[in-house]
Image (cartoon, rainbow, N blue to C red; front, side, top):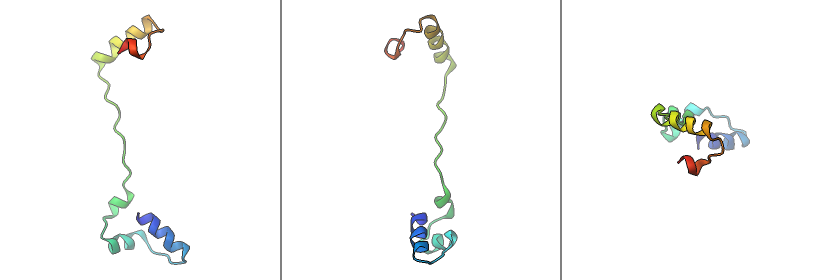
Length: 67
């Protein structure tokens, strides 16, 4: 949101810093720079190892057979 406003102002020839826009709109700066990070999938060895062994024994097994 702030970046879009800043780009619009720059297109009109007005240069405003991000920190100043944050103060104007009462938005924390960390909110502007925040990028969500996906968590790594949790792999449980007690489930993964038997499934890997089953697939190695019979590579023709598909998802539905393994599930």
